[in-house]
Length: 142
Image (spheres, rainbow, N blue to C red):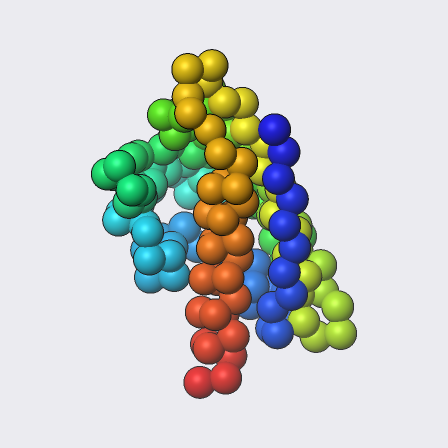
């Protein structure tokens, strides 16, 4: 399954990319992030655990990211959500007239026994984008 969402943020691409690349700040941006444990980060490669609050409780995923400054961030989870056998994706950052278009793509393989609703995944991805937009634009105006 694949989800693609786009959103424009009124900030330069370097600022937008910086917020997404700094995984340690995600807890400040996303209200469902409980914690982040970074195992490796050299500015290009990142490996970390992220714990998020879901309706059924907390879940922790382990992710690996490849960061291409001001262009894209690729991600795959070596320990995905309990609903999935795999999750991967990419954020692409495109500057347009001083603003930044973010395109977020996620690909999921759902476990056979999992009860699944595509609308819920779309909601989580949209929430991610909206939360970053709000935080980034506030930091640029305030």
